[in-house]
Length: 260
Length: 307
Image 1 (cartoon, rainbow over the protein chains, first blue to last red):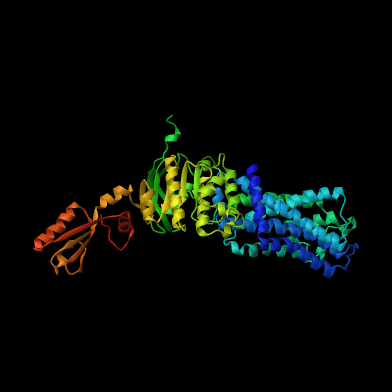
Image 2 (image 1 turned 90 degrees about the vertical axis):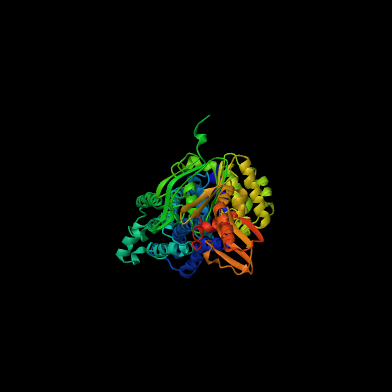
């Protein structure tokens, strides 16, 4: 356990010292929220909820995707390319300590990212915070989202042949999914059916829907495709992706670029 | 008392490593006893690092088998790692973390680590303790890598070109450390391009060429077997060297130099040849082969095999 904590500590200070990465992975979702919220802020949907509040809730899904999926995937590709992973492999450090260390980083970043987005929502867009039972729901949606996205990040990092391209490769699914999963464009009923079907396979749609349940009034459920929050489906899809992610990780994990 | 502890430090038999079509190691067998320093010599691409990777458990050999401290480096990874110290050729560890933080992190993996402060002092890393890895010079990074390999009190150390990029002082410190490790009974397997390093440190030398072992022995036995490699003879000028059965040239009038692996028999032949020409030999001097000469003659494709 001590080993995992030392690893987590080094991961965190490593991340916070790299100011460029910090600004780009961390501040980017908040900046997008400010932009979208300001541009569309005056519009109200049929349920009478302002677009800026809808963006705040949905954008948390983007925040988690960004910190968990992109940071995990790119970090792992980098560690693999520069030999960090290999060097750690040549020590008595158990594999679990490496993954726990990374997980601590991702969890801390995702929490901070969410807090930052909520801060923007509350201070700039007057979004009220939910009650305790909604926070409880938030906790499980948040944890399932972080776990699923991190595992998928680890799995996708195996496809990255050159760590320089990691950001670009990882951001393709991220950006595409934002558009079709109700993060940038909500209600999703504006999308063609086939695109909705595609989006519904992936976790992002369900993450965004879950976070909207937590942070929007009950009446806003009328704007969802099913006309309800479908929390059971949220749990199911995210849970399945956690399992799929884990299996993909175990199948694709490599310690270095040279061993195939 | 006679348990698993008598197992050789490294035992390789017919190890083959290939990358796709290319064979990096083409059937290498070697046995390295405990408590010795073995130097693996060879050009770039001779297969040294690939062989080391097999020992370190980073690669499973494509054929043949490897035992390290009596264990399978891949299958018994978890059992083996606490007993090994591995210094990779390159590879950053957390570019944004400071030297001291990195060393303490690796110390935290070990059950009974060395004192990190002492190790930093020994390797002259104290003044860069708070410097981030990416700001360290090449030599400092190497010294940190060495510290990381040693911090867990290993029984067996693998050092891939340990002194590459180091200045003379750091190189000597490293050599001293390796000598101390041997004195403490630690086994050391290192690769190097530097023949003086091998000659000074190694109990055993293995010379690799194109993925195979070209020669093996102690530095003394390798140089002794090769005998003399340069004979300078002063005699009458203008002798016709074509009939001399060794590569020879007249460097300046009357000064002949004869090269090749000249054993006692060959020396007699050379001097006999001078006698047969009726020349007056007025001076003879010879130079013993160094490890470098042996190495070059074994690994160069241009100079034919001289054995």
